[in-house]
Image (cartoon, rainbow, N blue to C red; front, side, top):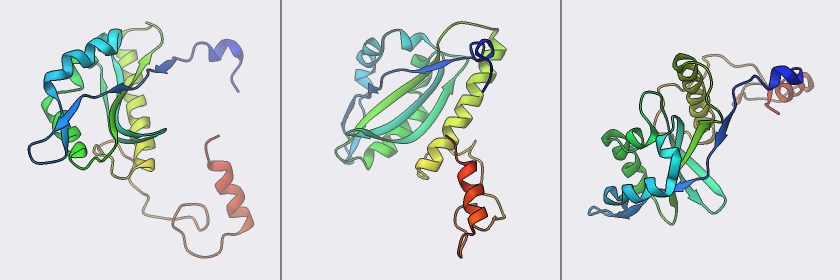
Length: 181
């Protein structure tokens, strides 16, 4: 673990409460984003509309969230980025199959203003890449896969997922030690 004074210098980001995406019944069946209600969505979102960072689009059912899209905004603010036409097509594709779930956007923003724009942009890009890979592991149906690390063309018996056969004790030890804590 890093010394206390070093940890405080690590850039911190926070997760904002989920904002419910307004939806309506689509003409072709299923649901779609209610574009005419987005002004109200941003009013309820408050100051986050004018921030930059990463955002996650998912379908919530009770206490679970299935993530379908991860994006970032570094040049614009969330309000100008999250509901662009190509994003709406992605969201509507997911919503067309949705049943009894609630569409939400979750925002990840810097906790404080610091550094120059280039530094913050680099951090946001790294966070987006990490979020995409974590979301893909949880849901291979993730809609954006451009930054997903592809599966390796090799396997380590008993350590990498999907290896057949009995797992040795040392392989289990290695596999456990590689899991995030």
